[in-house]
Structure formats: structure tokens, C-alpha cells
Length: 119
Image (cartoon, rainbow, N blue to C red; front, side, top):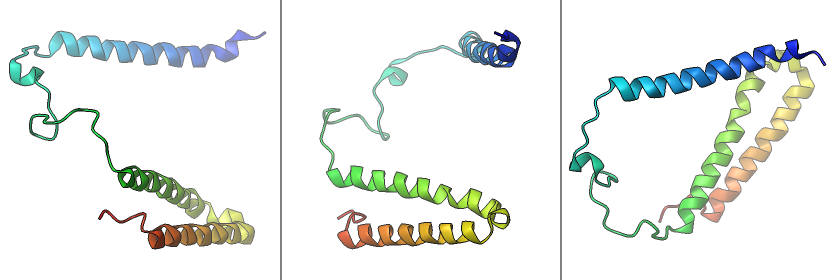
């Protein structure tokens, strides 16, 4: 087995670890460390916490968050397609048109179901 092929990977891991640890140590040594009660107090949204941290959220919050992530990831597919559109030719164009139609139909469906309403 030829271990010379793995040397760049090992070097990358070692340098990444050294840089990560060195930046943490350097920040701890050089940076100011003056804790006071205001810095150590719990902070959330600019005011003191007033309820239990395990309070329940409405399911619509999670639904909108998941739909945002889903459509955000789907729109990320437009960038590589736009960059390589000339090399893909007509089959790539038609495949992307099918994807766009599915994208629009899915968006229309969740809109009509009211999944994007905050009310």
C-alpha cells in the first residue's frame, strides 16, 4: 500500500487542527477576560428570559422553516445550471424546464394550502 498518496490529506488535517487550536489559544491568551454579572446573565432578544426555555412553538413555525429550507435548496440548483447551460444543450434545457414546472407546481400547492400564512 502506497501511503504517499495520503500525505496531502494528513497534512491538511494537521494544518487545520493547528490553525484551529492556535486561534483558540491565542484568543484566550491575548483577549480580555473580565467577566461581570451582566456578561454572565442569560440573554435572549435584548431582554431577560420570562418563560420556560421548553415552551411550545406553533407547528406552523416549523412548517414555514422547513419549506424555506426546501425551496432555498431547490433554488440553489439554478446556479450550476445557469453556468453550464451552453454545454448541456437541449436535453439539459428540457430537464431543467421540467424541474422548474415541478418547482412552480409545488410552490403553488403550498401557497393554496396556506402553509406560508403566519396568521
